[in-house]
Image (cartoon, rainbow, N blue to C red; front, side, top):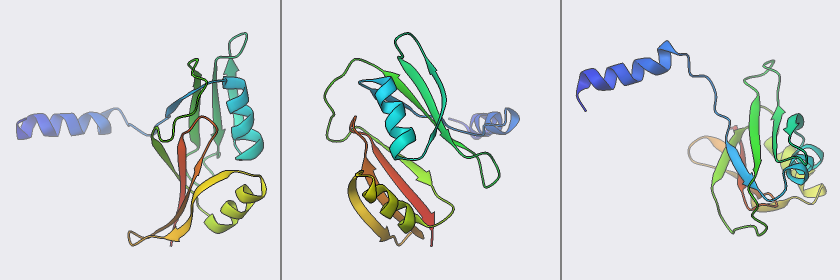
Length: 140
């Protein structure tokens, strides 16, 4: 790739104002996954589609303290959770340890307790029922 083509590719992100990522998680039951994200993890249901439901989006935030977090939940027919399928990092603006404590009280599967990392973040990781890892972190 030439320098000109690298610059042109980089400029597309600026030109088109790339501004967010919405990961899509394959889940065994979209309605159940949406309830878990809302009732246990503190997200809000943004939409749920299909009859019966097969696709949903949950969100948290309203731009008052940063961009909202959106996660799409796609029902793909898998019933068993896998040990590790990928990871999503969610930045938290306030009290990572308090969030961890709240999740522990709700019975969330914590796979890594809060730790201060050398790269300047305090973080912990959970596994949701379909096997996805969500890492919550905040600046030290």
